[in-house]
Image 1 (cartoon, rainbow, N blue to C red):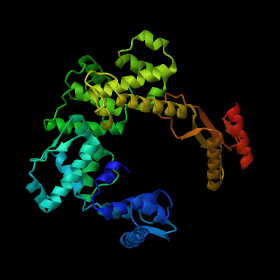
Image 2: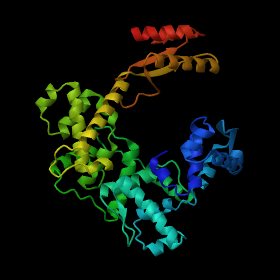
Image 3: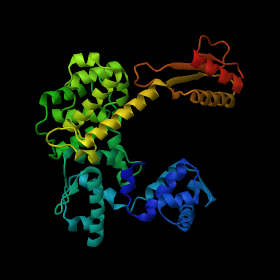
Image 4: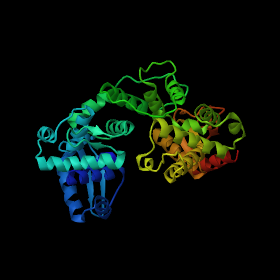
Length: 425
């Protein structure tokens, strides 16, 4: 779950319960580990587990003791509903939703709406302000409680609230579902764009523009801005200002397309000041560097750098320590992901025999591929341009040609040998 989600939980007991359940959803964990994670005593963990058992009743089996707990879902839908009910008293969710609707209210009016005393509201507002300031560099107006600050930061906050959180109070959940279920946006871009960020950012952008909150980008390169806008939507299907289209394009870019050298080079050619001769002569490592420099420049100019790094950019445009840090982070990420892609393999199975046999073969094949250093991808090839090697596994004697053909009932040693032969080949 996201950090923002946990930050919005202000009731200590509810936050503990959510954290506890989230941990048990993923893995077995001991009482001592839970106490350390939740920053409480072992006695508190024991009491919380007892109350959760009673509260969730037939929705779950919560087994074990402080030496180790194990969660098993009995009724997933009921479990989700009960978990959702834990959020009903969390006021920050309602406050953020009110902010998104741009409803300016005094402290007194807001306290009355939330049915809070002035003192409790003041404390709750301070909690929200701390989240906004620390994570996004924005804040609430003291008088009208209007959210103020850099517009791209405000939109980032609302995007993360409505499109990345795993759980919402029931009163808000239907609105969020409607936002997610809108008709997909399908711009005619030649660049690969991630649908969820594009849909979410467009929803937030249109709402903010309708409310009169526009992007102000003083001194921005307008020619480059138009290039980015056209890269998102050459057919102009989205009726938005160019600077907003530029932001949407950068927010929705699919990073994995840049693992293909030709796409990487074309992106730098279109959006970087580097001249063509430099790109032609550049080594693979130098192209990675040019790509990262281009992305940082575009984020700084038309989207935003991560907030914690933004203050390090000086007015003269000189490279700051913060920008160097971001360059190193992005470069390392690209290198790591490219190495992962180079070792990835698309696996498909055409198996016969009882289901238990088929599942055993799949398990052993996956294990041996991982032992031999492969990252596995099963299903349809994603947006890799078809460059990922494909391997097909079968135990059907009449299915030829195929990559690896096993006996109808293979043993572990045969699978190991066949995978090693494939790697050597």
